[in-house]
Image (cartoon, rainbow, N blue to C red):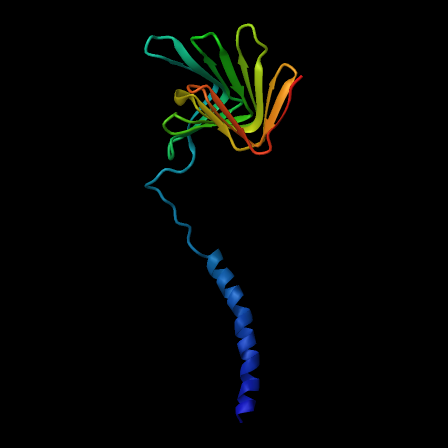
Amino acid sequence: MTGGHQIHWLPLGLAGLLALPAFWLNQLIHRPVVEDLGGFAHEPDTIVENFNALAFNQQGQPLHALHATRLVHYMDDDTTELLDPRFSVQEPSGNRSEVRARRGQVSSNGQHVHFLGDVRLTRSAAGKPPITLETEYLWITPDAGIMRTDRPVTLKQGRAAMHANRLLMNEQGKEITLSGRVHARYE
């Protein structure tokens, strides 16, 4: 008799197991959508076309400028996204640096600027060929004078070129650290 009961329960057990995924999917489909009407959605609160901004030092001299074909600000995390950003710095020494990229993002406090996609930094100094830096991602902390990337990077000046997997540049300490498969060509 025990064996007979197992035969009858086996098809019912298999049918129950097969019905569980269908029941679970049905519950997922009919689950009510919960909306957070008290918080902020990640939707833009400001959109500016052909954006231009200039920051000054305490003496009223320009420190750096930021331009973008489009700026989008999000209230929920106070971040800003940039399309075709161009960031330039005019140093008191006369040196000029400019960064261009396809996209950019500015942190909520404005202390960090991230450049993404075809990033190109050009630095010119009087009497010297310009230095260019090319990578896919560059993180700049403008007030601290720090630039870094954890992506492959190429530095060029004239016919000399250096390649590395990572870069850390400290403008105030006048230091450049290249790491990860560094190689150079100097002509």
